[in-house]
Length: 242
Length: 242
Image 1 (cartoon, each protein chain N blue to C red):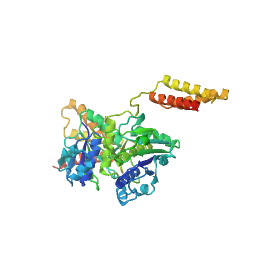
Image 2: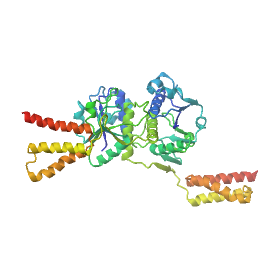
Image 3: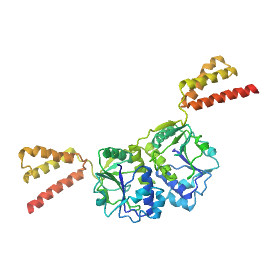
Image 4: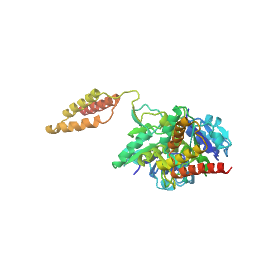
């Protein structure tokens, strides 16, 4: 179960298509349309959906907002217009966190988006638990309909399918052990000794620390350590051949 | 200072315009283009920029990626294609947090986006500190160029201009005091006493608790409390008039 996107009187078929694409990108599949001014299965909509046809084909149509929301437990609006209205304002991230918890408790949630030009009416807004405001540049804050849907859907996906925030991907290899790294550092030191790199004896410890520090700060893969060993061997071999 | 968006060989003027709009929505202003296949000041680009003309007009052009990034301290790629490459993968949110810290230390950062169809080459990817992966539906994960820029720019804006995640906006009024709320609850109780609502005496405390609980859970504004008082007064007055 995931939040339901409800577009009130969307006017442009392409926008409905773009919304479907943004939804499916983030795993949202249920779209409701209240008195759309365009056919959501028009080729223009399908073209911009870029493959998210199922979202458009399964979209349901309603005459009024109250009919479109009657089975929902919680409804949120999205509006950037300033209104003289008492309302709870949430960031998309905060809202997404609430959605995950409410859905885990078996609730059905909807997010209401107004027509492209005019936005939601006050009559629609007062049916909502709160208004989700996308933080943006106060001097240039107008997102288009599909961009706004994407931000909310993206935060939903983040909150519901928490991915690790950082991963080091090694492909076919693995993180080098400290032993493997030490093997390389020792090889490097020996070869540098051979070429008299540490010619001022008392400076050697500090110079060595500098080198150790460089390579220890990178989370090197085993394969990369082998590459570095090969680089040093080859540099030396070529030097000796000369 | 904010991250610099670098588009490598973007092919469609409208996409460059949409990128400019998404950037300015989130306060990003510096756009660099490497061998663009379209004129970024073409009317098609300006139309889709929807007012973000300054981003397009100030965009700078480069022949190669190394030239476009030479003054940067850190560079990140954005690619969804699986590569057999050792790389640090970050979510947009994690990356944005790192960007804020690095910029506070005076570093210049760039984010690299590849051409619409083919994406970044491996040659470009290996110049990057890490790859930012937008978490999305694994069965339908392709975001378009401007949508990808929007997600990263949105996270940057969130991280750099942390807005409070929930706000209750009262407009011209203020949060009701507990005294104001209690005044209403007392009025309600008195009027209900008058109409013998609590006719089973020993149940009154529980019935009253239920009512108190309902109104105490809503963060009511002072004006709303006055509205509720008026509602009760008028209901009673009309009843008395009958």
